[in-house]
Amino acid sequence: MAAFDGFLLLLLQFATLGLAAWALVDALIRPASAYVAAGKLTKPAWGAITGLALVLAWLTPPLSFFWLPAVIGAVVYLVDVRPAVRGLQRGGNSPW
Image (cartoon, rainbow, N blue to C red; front, side):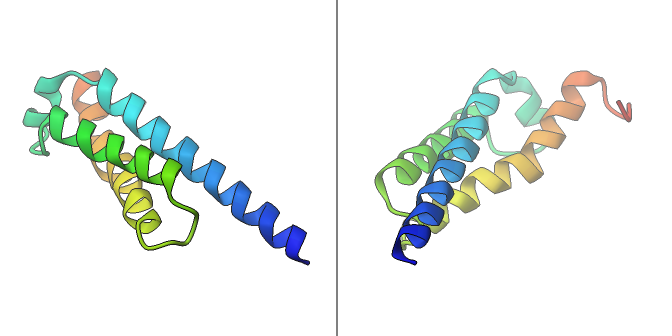
């Protein structure tokens, strides 16, 4: 049973690393003007937040005290900021 628990924690850590890396790369490839136009924090701010999330996800074990802010930072970017910035980059109200 301990081996299974260890496997799940390892899987959770790799999933968190992947999520934070995706958020960081996406934050860095979007134009800085889109963040301002969407009314979000600036590109350097989101780059720092997602970069810190990646570092925390790498250095801390899953379900630890500093792991949770890493997950929250990456998820907030991907769920809130990314759609707003991406929608402006595409031209606004297009459903595709």
